[in-house]
Amino acid sequence: MLGRLSTRIRTSLAAGLAALLLLGVGAWWLRGHMYDAQLAAAESEAQYQAREIGRAFTLGQQLPDSDLMPYLVLDKDGRLLTLGGPLTTQRLAAPLPPVAPALAPAGWQPEGERITVGPASPAAANRYSGRTFAAMGSWSMYYRVTDTTGPTTPPLGPVTVYVLATPFAAEAALHTIDPVLRAGVPAAALLVALIAWVATSRALRPVEAIRAELAEIGEHRLDRRVPVPRSGDEIARMATTTNATLDRLERSSVQQQRFVADASHELRSPIAALRTNLEVSLAHPERTDWPAATQEALTSVERLQQLTEDLLFLARGAHPAAAGPDTTVDLSAVLRELADQYRPVIGGRPVLVVDAPDPLPVRGSRLRLHRLVRNLLDNARRHATSEIVLATRRTAHGCVLEVRDDGPGVPPQDRERIFEPFTRLDEARSRDAGGSGLGLAIAADIATRHGGTLRVAPSPRGARFLLELPDP
Image (cartoon, rainbow, N blue to C red; front, top):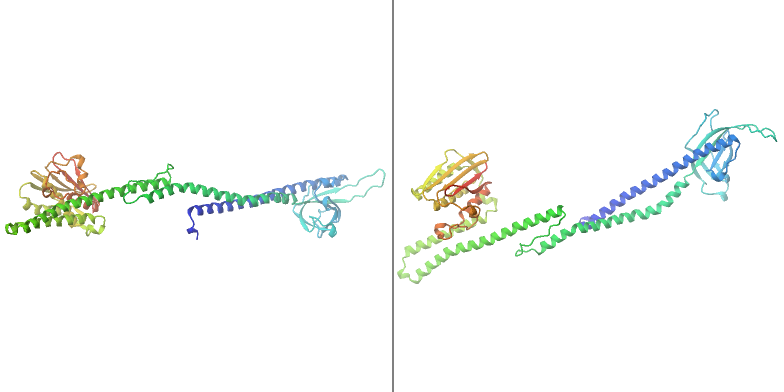
């Protein structure tokens, strides 16, 4: 059920309940501490008054009851001699506390004795009636007092004085603080919940701004970005990551649109050539060289088929299954095999040099790696003047395949751009001579899916392509 509530409500409830719990425990501790402190003060005062009353009995003095706490005096046999303070109209419930021993040491002070007080009559009942109090005791000798006008008073012997440590001051303190705590603790918890509500609302305000902006961003408005708070916290990092994701989506959308436009442009040329050839042949069938027309149509169809396969390969590039089976492939063997296939095709011009004496195993798809190297060879053959060099070697970081030609080379500013689909550096070349512009893009895609990189390295003459693959 709590999961259906908003984050703001859950946070406020959690803060309010936590505050209520903590403040309740604090209030309970404060009440107990105040009560114990007041009771300890009452017991200390009762102990002091017990000593003073015992001393007064010793000297035959009378202390004013108005200044004293409730007390009682017992003789050596435990008989009640007198009551003082508010107990003058009360009676004591048996049994009485034990009296002082016959030879009690000086300063004998029993503590924690319990005395129960009962009313002398129903009319005399008050707040002492039926309650048990802690009694603080003091023992003293009562000496004979000589009266010059009368007979000598016989000694009464030792007496025990008990003063009741009443909890009335502690209870009065609790009566004073309880209304404050009962009203203050819930009010404080509610205030904490309100503060949590306001703080959470302010904290979630940037999230709401991000949500509103994302709701406005559509397929054709990918240039918009969400606001980034200046707080530098998790929300700011989330907004930064969201903007970075939108940047990638915008670049992907632009690339996709350009890819579709370029693909349409590339497909239009062979389709137009094929249609023109067929229309002319049908319009003048008696003057048409049908074997030549059929050969031209077949050439256009082959170009369409190659373009379609290349486009399909790039379209499936995001799917790992399109990479083919993952096995161990000897890269040097692939290089030598393709060189043997290309030598009869290119003849002796340009010269094809292979430098791959040692086996170079890598993990990947043999079919895809064949296509990668073949695309690099096709590119080098179109631009080489007199020589193409194919080489493999092992480095500390993995395996390297190098394809180098002595052609015009690649300008530094175009070394990244040539791996984009449909990129041609020589726009004046015919499309048949220059290719479709997909070969290097496919090669770079295959290298990436094999965990490697394909790049153009600096070279004093011509173009130098380096394929770097990790060790198997």
